[in-house]
Image (cartoon, rainbow, N blue to C red; front, side, top):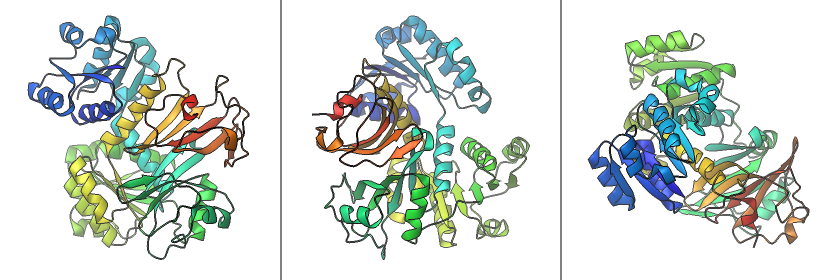
Length: 450
């Protein structure tokens, strides 16, 4: 597919890196010639220097034959207008980054009028991911399928865990076949495990199950932690604002510490049910005074990755049950995995996955039926499809379906029922099916078949 990406900041450069792996034809656009040159040299893509609101620049970038125009500059208004112009010039679909809360809440009503096919807000999506993790504090990461009916939850296998040394088949039998072990990370490798796969200390496992079964599973493993009811947030940026909104709506007590006086006043006005403190969240004395040890969860969301890591390590040392850190630099993100932090989130990665899902869903002529896509590893993805009438395996038992290698059917949702699949399960028209795969670039359900 032909993609034109405008704005080579954090999000834009991450999108280029992600889409290059998907083998798309990419043209990048930015007013900064040095940024364009760097991206062109690193990823072997085409580049155009100029503003995304200039007709001649867009035409030079080939927007008239673009399957997607993605505008992710730092200015919401520019992104929206760029998409309007790009659509007029012939772009098939347009995607705009819209960060301002005032604009964002109106975009759904204005999208059709403006000709936008999709819009995204990195801070809003990151806040949504963090709030999901706070529902399962025992987990490192949480992904949702079928509108939240089914979850994929990541756990680390620590010393003393009763799963150590057991096969996937034996674990499934011991725990009444109420969940599915879908992926196992071991060091730098990722496995879609067969029944004879043995779990080892240090593994990270992803299980697929309902919320109730996940809670039951963690209780039996004696790693259960109740939902966070008191959350301390350091840093009062847009992620903190969106996260606090979600938590307050869920009746969670929220305390935000922000060191900018003007921003503190804005947050206090916009979030009257939150406690907003003016101060430096990296000061131990302030954290102690504001009840760090009594908090169920601690979320570090300052604008500096290094500060987030250091203050999160301190919170963990102080015994806070759940610690979440925002880290956006790829080099630091890779390093902090060794520090033992509970959960690390990267807004640029969150939004890249979000946009890849949308692009992949429209890549096949059929529309493909993709509802959800999560890139869990460079070579492993979890996808949710609608089962449509043209799928060639309708009504066939999974054991006879003829799946490609490295494909796992992780779950079936039929109406309001979640079905944990076995060899006799069948896919019917209207089902939602979760597919875990190491086969790259699946765009439609039929591609899982040999």
